[in-house]
Image (cartoon, rainbow, N blue to C red; front, side):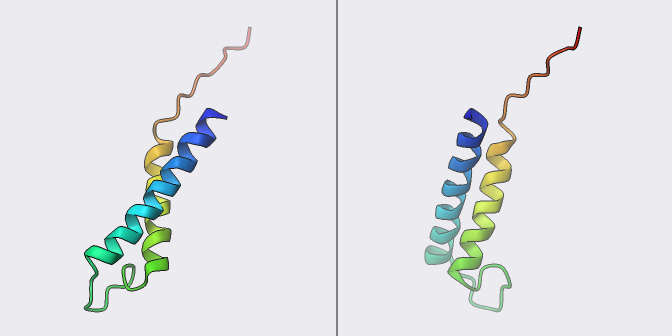
Length: 64
């Protein structure tokens, strides 16, 4: 449950960061990813989810 919460917060923060990037630092010369706010938000959500999922604590139980 904790891992899902960490990844979900990364997705939300990444989407917000992607949208803020679109608003403040818009690329106007034909940038494929940053041309629309939806694209920026989805890209930010993907990057945020991947980044925050790297903080999962994985513990493996040893079979005895």
